[in-house]
Length: 352
Image 1 (cartoon, rainbow, N blue to C red):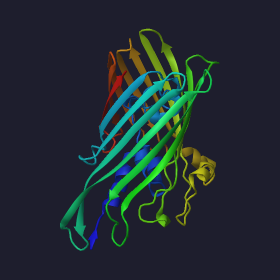
Image 2 (image 1 turned 135 degrees about the vertical axis):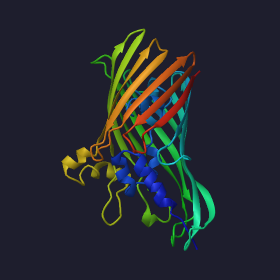
Image 3 (image 1 turned 30 degrees about the horizontal axis):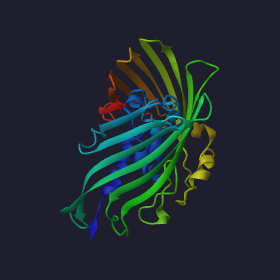
Image 4 (image 1 turned 60 degrees about the horizontal axis):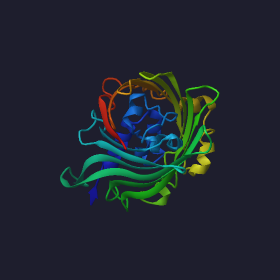
């Protein structure tokens, strides 16, 4: 009989690569690759973007932002995922938006996380008898429109595929593979009472539970609430400086007997399963700044604060725009030995 340790290894990858509040849900939620933030601009600003969401990555960050976008744009992103942990992991993201006058802006995206090659060994020995590649991906379609001069709303629907292993571990029957679907909702508000202020909110990954082996072992999706603001401190012809601030919380409610609430119930019960003080500690804060000179060169800096895990990564980024093309670079450092340290991300954005 064959055995595999890959499921445990993949769990450790996610635990190492996500903020602690997200990683804490490893035993509570499935398909956590949906929590990895795309868009190198956002990465450079401490992963705070829900109230800005003004490029093709709005498909992920806040579909309400699509309502304010005109024209067409393609974004392509690549990152070697957790370079301190393994050399064969990578994350790719592609999104495209297309505006139709009088209707709104449509969007589509593909997210792919390659978890590397896994070895299959005999149950009673170290001999490698086979291997396979583990991966997760999602394909989504989005639409955003204005419901007034100052308010954009949007919807994103996604199909999810998780392929951790072609068979179960040990005596488990079935396979570590599954299909599912999820829905995101977003709203972005450009405040008329304070010029240059945006407010944003989204609710992501609402859908059926994720089942690999059987329904009794199903995990909820990582439903997440994110809210934030963006304020354009300087907004002149040659100099633009924007401050962003986001808060997010995982809305998953799991019980000691292994059962969990469906997402439409957990949206409410996940706020009451612990003392208020502990619930507040599970909220992760993201903040950052973006500076543009003459719409040609961008510099970014950011930070996020995860109190439960005492994880406080610093992020840095830069952008270069020429004509219809924008190249962005992002870098994360989370301290010596942390798997996120030295993570570099690259993206190319093309406008039409």
